[in-house]
Length: 511
Image (cartoon, rainbow, N blue to C red; front, top):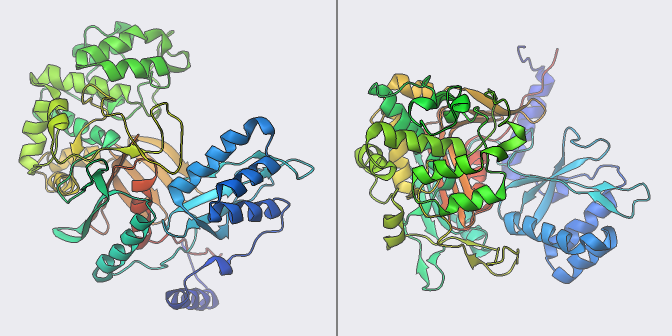
């Protein structure tokens, strides 16, 4: 449908945009809806923003059953650790839960978006449900209401980063570039709190699932040289895998999370994979837990042919890389990706990672017994994994990841035809017209749209690890955020930069 504006609506819109430069939307612009949950919302935000644990506990005891008090105190403490203080921004356009409005809040310091929903019982004296929607943006005009000029980005991000670091909402490194020009880069926080050693621009961080892009590029290179085809079944490379599964599942299925091979919702399987020291051992763990394949898929296995995110398929791809290339996974990545891309602070070998003198240790609010304790960050278990797998484990720096993505775009690592295939949509995890967002997946790369903002890349999260690796093709802008705080710390920064590059706005349609 063609969008047509009436003259009056154009005038109203332009007036609103012009006003927004001098009078940004603050909490006082917000109008609470007429709903029975509003009184409770206001009580919550008051004690939440003060972050007085005694008052927060009083609120929780007032509105939650006794048996869930400690759990709910932890719940709101986690939200605070991710977003900091909040201010209400707008009422959600559509209710995700019938008759319970969602309220979009913006972090006062983090500048990130979260939608809170409170569902009350009939007597309005108990909260029965309180979903927290993360990772998406409100639909409609968002501050700063128009893209920030690149010449202003550097100073703005310096001030923004200083503010969130002061609130201890971020530790890590950030790089924003347009084409060959670095617009902003900065290093923040400590890579080692015990030794009081600071992060610098060459510090390497764990990138968790962003590793999947490296695995995918390696597979694509092997396809270009004719050593495999995307249509090849994995039985061709992994003869030990059950034939009824391996004959059906192809390289394409593994690259797109559409195979149906998934075990990683089963905790004993996850614990076993952490101890694996080779790709053969990773395969053996899958064979050992074959009867625990998710949702009963092992019986009469059929390829799923729809998106279901899993680490297990990419670990199998790592085994394929070793089988086809004759090299270890780490050596292949070093020789055919790190070296040609000029990546000098990146590691795919667990021994080199452990020996690295400028590696950021990860920190989280979870203690050694996995209890959440806001107020003190604990070092994430340094021996959490015994190897770098095809699904996660590589360490890299912001400048190296910038070089890496530029090398992909400049066809240093793969040719243009292959790049187009990698960045084409092969699966759709999520799409919503109401939220004006599409989450799609290519070959090892996420292809996302939020409003008018289109990105290609990946992210990764683990205890003490947060990575965001995004390219905006329309603007030719690269955004690399690596954090050793994990959780939402890196995502908050990357999401706010997205608002600066492309504020979320949908014109009003008229007939």
